[in-house]
Image 1 (cartoon, rainbow, N blue to C red):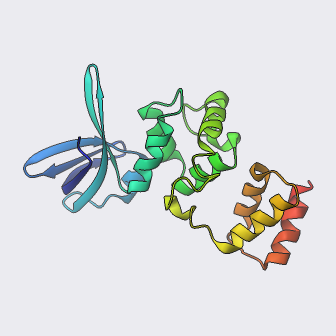
Image 2: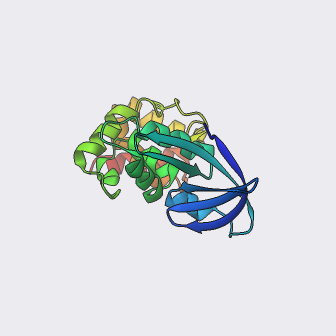
Image 3: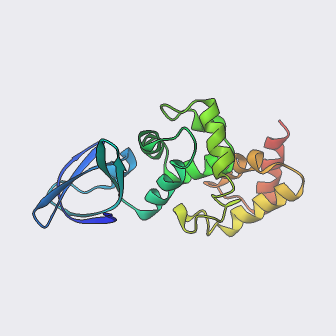
Length: 195
């Protein structure tokens, strides 16, 4: 199994990276998010890889960071989500947003991914929300496992008041940028949840 490539980036396209390692050029399918993280051709690069072996095909997938590969591995375990759809999901949303959407069971956000309908989005939420950690299951994924104490306190306060986590997570995310004092954040969140 090929788990990692380190070498010169010969070519990068929105869906493919060609990396030369020891005189051999490896073509790896990539997501748009990995494409955005790659250096210009000619530079040294590391890709964390997944080898797909099928009846008529052997393919290599490349990921700029190991967390993206871990999320890919979880996505393809969902019934109806294959490698192409998993790469599309990883390229359509940032890792943080994708994990947040799954955790919050935000079907509407997930259906914005090309090829993901309502049923597939619901399956993703149902099958992965627990794994993504009720969600501490994916340590270190985009910083969500080591959540900000401010966010954790606000989320905990709202869920302890009886609000469902899938309703609470988008509100907490919307307040993340301004990060008002906790009492003010709680007041704003309650106002938003009562609409």
